[in-house]
Amino acid sequence: MIKTLAVVGATGAVGQIVLEEIQKQGVQYEALKLLASSRSAGKTVQVAGQDITVELMEPAAFEGVDVVIASTPDEVAAECVPWAVERGAVVVDESAFYRMDPRVPLVIPEVNPQAIAKHQGIIASPNCSTTQMVVALHPLRQAAGLKRVVVSTYQAVSGAGLAAQQELLNNTQSRLSGQTGSAAIFQHDIALNLIPQIGSHKHAGFTSEEMKMVLETHKIFEDDSIAVNATCVRVPVLIGHSESIYCETAEPLELEQIFELFRSAEGVTLIDDLPNKSYPMPRDCADQPDVFVGRVRKDLNHPCGISFWCVSDNLRKGAATNAVQICKLLSAR
Ligand code: 2RA
Figure 1 (cartoon, rainbow, N blue to C red):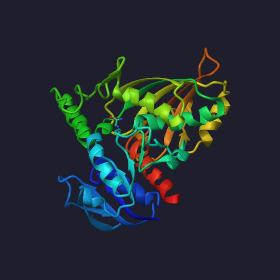
Figure 2: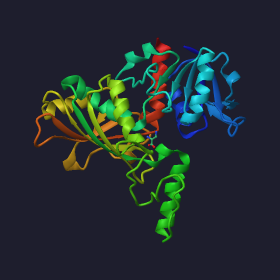
Figure 3: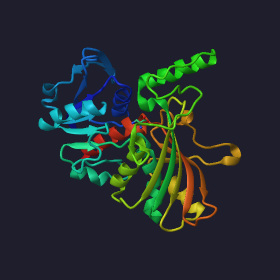
């Protein structure tokens, strides 16, 4: 049982789902504090039938707090997470700011729950596009090792926040009425379009989002030898990131073994029936906690090559659900 649990960024898109997941996953706490910036402080939020007033996120607000779940932009996390840690709290942070810090475990409870034992006050939750890919690859890697991954993502606009969802809706309406949409949040008009850029240029022609998929995968699996190659694309979908994943295991697996591994993997749901047009699609996977896998095939030319399609709600398993699962792990210790 956690004595005082604080949710930072409680009024944001992910923060609201964090509050829902805390109840759904049955996280036990004595007191719940909601913290946010001055824009949202003073608002009232209903949690489990109770009205809670959002308090201003400032250093003193973390006095007496035991566990924090923080869903904020990187620059806010850089400032406020140390306020909580200095006052003795353990922070589950969803931003990218601390993910690659060697003192900070990067945790997906289905994959590397043991890593939380090494925390020094901060535990990071991975990027949404990494999380769903790693959850899906984990059973294959456990059974047959993992040498190489080539992934192309089809990422929903909600990964860029609530205003980005509105931009897609407004721009689609503009396009349908023959006008040009604006590009305030995205690099180009996203309506009826695809944008092969998420984040900024980071390394050797790869974007920051693509490099997150490489580096975070290495850190979670504790194996820098896995060759990961990512292309990240923004698509005009509201919720649910999709990924076309090709991987090569170290040992060959039979197709039926691969199906069985996906069927029995924790946090994975297999939907694979091509003749009956059954496979995961983002609209069906929204509001679901799992990582969905389908279109599973063996490479026609390589005995260890496997292709599959992977979809997950980026705001849930990609963010809030994973963070609350980490919080549950912490409170069980
Ligand atoms: C996105 N992965 O989809 C990012 C959010 N962390 O924009």
